[in-house]
Length: 120
Image 1 (cartoon, rainbow, N blue to C red):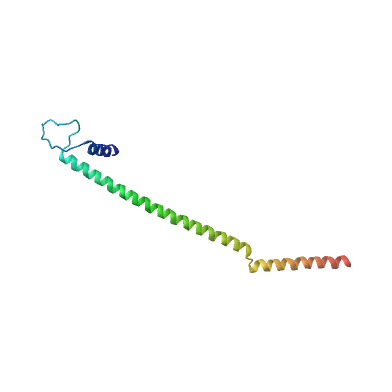
Image 2 (cartoon, one colour):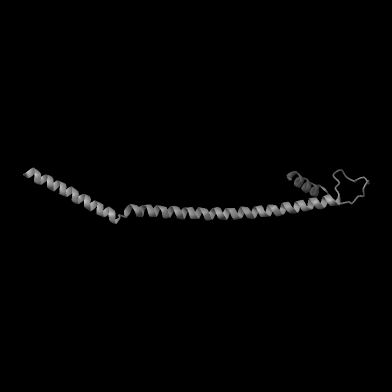
């Protein structure tokens, strides 16, 4: 595919003038002789390649935009996760407070009981 494109481009650059010749007539210069049908096919091929190249460029631009959006989303999610982790560390629940109170009361009761037994 690339070789054909290179051939077409070099053919267009090197050919200084276009001289139609009939079948069997000797060509005035060295080079390649192609039929009208082949020329049409090559021109269509070049047109298709240019169109595909344009589509690939657009696709690349769209992908770059998507990558940028995904990167921004990831940054936002990471920031939110960090904020939630710090908030979770700070926050104590009702059961946590109740557990601390009950544990403190139990330890105080045990110490009080031990003190009363020791003094008797």
